[in-house]
Image (cartoon, helix red, strand yellow):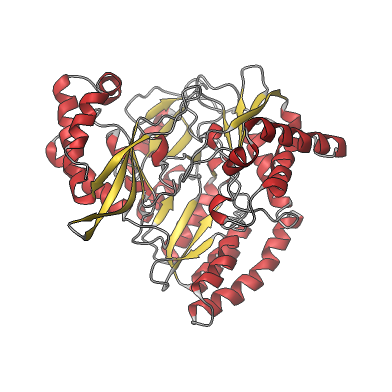
Amino acid sequence: MTDYMKAFREDLIQFDESTRDFYTGKMSKQEYKGISGGFGSYAERGGKSGMIRLRMTAGRLTKEKLAFVVEMAERLSLNTIKLTTCETIQLHGLTGRQILEVATKALDHGIVCRGGGGDHPRNVMAPPLSGVLPGETFDVIPYAEAVADYLLSILYEIKLPRKLKVGFANHPSNQTHATMRDLGFVAKEDGTFDVYSAGGMGPNPKLGLRVATGVNGCDLLYYVRAMVDTFLTYGNYESRAKARTRYMQEALGEEAYIKAFHEKLNAALSAGGLNLSVEQSPITKTGTGEISGQRIIPQKQKGLYAVSYHPLGGIPKREVLRNLLDTIQDFEAVEVRLGADGTMYIINCNAQEAEQVLKVTEDGAQTAFEHSVSCIGASICQQGVRDSQGLYRACVQAVREAGLKDGALPVMHISGCPSSCGTHQVGVLGFHGGTKVVDKVPQPAFTLHVNGCETLGSERFGEQWGTMLEKDIPEFLVALGQKVQDSGKAFMDWYPDHLNEMRELADKYLV
């Protein structure tokens, strides 16, 4: 066990005391939040229950880790298991004692909760199909795991102004939004990385600045150290609203920020000691059989397949996870990967194994629209303004009842508040929750975002078109989907040439 894992375990004594005090009414909500966030846990709306966030570095959910999640969910009778847009797993509806139990036992399975919230480096992300996806540059997971290990090792040495999110990309799809993170590494065909810094979603979103190109993998930790030191020096400790790294672009100016970053980089290089050496683990399993289908992804390893499973709303049922675990338990080299959109990928299956996985995951999304992304929402989250999960369910039901075909509507992204936990700013269609006063009466509402994009080279944040009342959104989507369907095209082919027509329709519902 590494030194920091031992320290994290010792930390649980303080967390235990604080959690007892909060759930027995001896500690205020705000005071507890300042402590519990550092352990990846927050009280839920109402203060009677809580959640805990399980780091899954690089989105890897091994069989052992999946078994832990399933066993905890079953033993504690949990009904809400949330797959997040940062490739973590959140367990909801826990008592104070259960939170401590999960945090303690998670460490026994190599799962870290420490730093999962608060002003800490968060879960390091990697593409869920890294190492198996045709068209990728190279497998970045070993690098992501090394970066995560380093950031956890310095957790006690640094006091950041706010959280720090790091992501890797190795394919044009840019599923991890690496070019929009606090620190992003984009793998290139020649085996090197481009480095992006000081980006982020949420209020005042910014694309990351490219601070370096052609960086050798052995030097990545120097860039991580430079990012940390730049944030420590120039981050805003006085205003939490302006403390994320993206505000440093404005405070310093782009050119000055890049210069400041390189000053910290040169200092780190001079200090030395952070040279990185990683080992690739090639897949040696022999593929057999052939299979195709909507949820089947042929891997670059001949005869092997990944199966995609998107539980509705990113909330898988515990019985489905149990069946999935039992199914894959004895499958050679098979593991689960978590995507940034709430999709699970079961990789390294031969054709027969893929067929079995398909059968136990039949309850998931069946269309592109049902793959829509939603944060946990205000029914649970204290920071939430609107019930994003409720809106997601209402929209799915309305679209199903309307009989719209797959492709008539795209994946949409829903956040319950301006924070982009549902990544609404990069969706072709996105919504963030708020309130609209109509006839002097506050009404549940969402702001509509249109034409966002996460693809490498085409990154952009969506344009805000206005506010819709929550009750009108399902009707708007059905009307939009019907218009697209009548054109005989799929939405993604239709909308680039029909934005004006789409705007005319949206204007009928905007208030």
